[in-house]
Image (cartoon, rainbow, N blue to C red; front, side):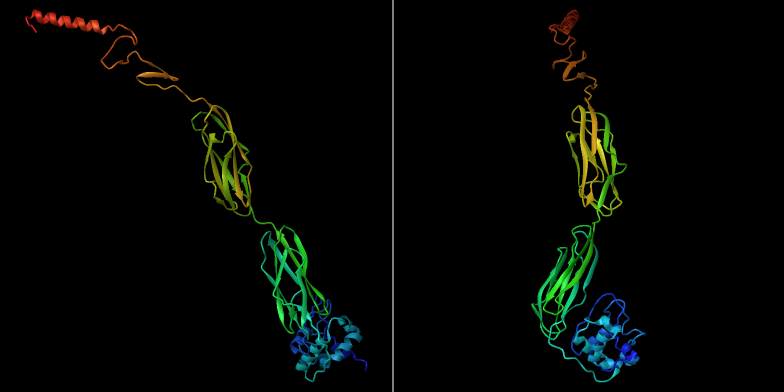
Length: 401
């Protein structure tokens, strides 16, 4: 064959593409549509695309740099192996793809395309070979991402295995054991991180195609779940109550509970514990079932109500779900004996004994001036003398009865 001219070399840099990684489209023999994809597609890093202004332009119909020479698949293949500017494509295009390029160039630049003989063979292609899930909260599952597996060859594709290599990435698919020519199936992947860390793994697709096992790179990051963080305002560690008589109530003391976290905290208990838990009582806006939003607060009111004398102690603990719990609060107080003296008009009481006053009325028969418990009542002689005087006076008056 006559050496190619510099202008023809430019024409035959069909696949000099700018890009990042090898990405060859599905090869369907003599497919102009697939040839158009290849004409514009990124294949090898650092190369100008065939459609660039320095090469052939966005369409072969412009006939820039004698692009119409590309209607021969054999000519293009020969140029890739013999011309330095095109060597980077060696091994990256199949005969079927050279045919697709020839079909596309012929359809737009004119002329009759000539093709290479292509043996029947499966060709496995993936719609993407990299999936980045981004950040996902620990324990949650990402939105599913899909990858399409296509048999772009001329023979049935046998699928050996499809698997994920890390349990954090779950893979399901609807692919049959044998994928017919021009058929596709779908892989679905999700990411469920178990820890707040970065994950990098892969999924593999093994077939009987010349490409063998293909790899899909998988990445994602687990992030800590938003939680509440409960603490006492002013960070108190205990409450001490003034001396209080048994059976009496002390003055109240108020604690403020704050949620300094990034999510709501649901209070599950506001509980008293310890040796003398029954000698203290709580009230306020903090209670079991309260949902405390981020940056919100509630109050716990504590009161001392001793049931026995001496030093009394207990603890106050608030617990919540989805939150860091605050420190427990120590409660203490001293109980004194209850007052046992009361005043009244008829008696004086000390302890459990009762003494009647000297003016008390004893008995149900009338008034008595006798000392309680005495055997002689001075009222009786007085009454007898008075009765005798009345009788004497009446006799003197001459009255008889």
